[in-house]
Length: 213
Image (cartoon, rainbow, N blue to C red; front, side):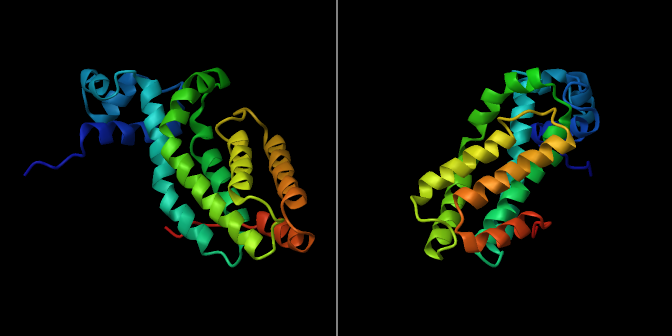
């Protein structure tokens, strides 16, 4: 009996995730993708007419969608709203740094792909905003966050996360990245948290979190 293979689109995406991580987007050709997926280039173009940029867009969406359930379960499993928010911030940024930012994109290529990636990510952004709104509302209700409109505060946090990931620079050094994370942490501590919750927030932001999945 012949071995069953995944559908061509899935095989192309599987190949992209391996090759982008190993050689970078710039170093991966369409011929490489077709060979890895064991498909003709015509089949690749049939499923992704716009070529590598479209494949990158869908691959990025696939990574975040695959991680989402584990993200949310891990975050909600934390003991209190402040730790939940810190856990989410850490996992959100770590996933981008570990997965997409290592794909070897130049800033120029990333900027050209970003509008399409953002469009594809709209359903994920909506789910992210809903989760952040829940976390902020829980923090306000428990008097660990300052009083305010939960959805507005969540939108500000989401914009901050995007500024450090999809809307940020890819060529930051480790020291620059650490400084960015410190600025985000202090922004939340000083602007959103009540004084009694700040030490817990800083401790939680320094912790390591593994997803439940």
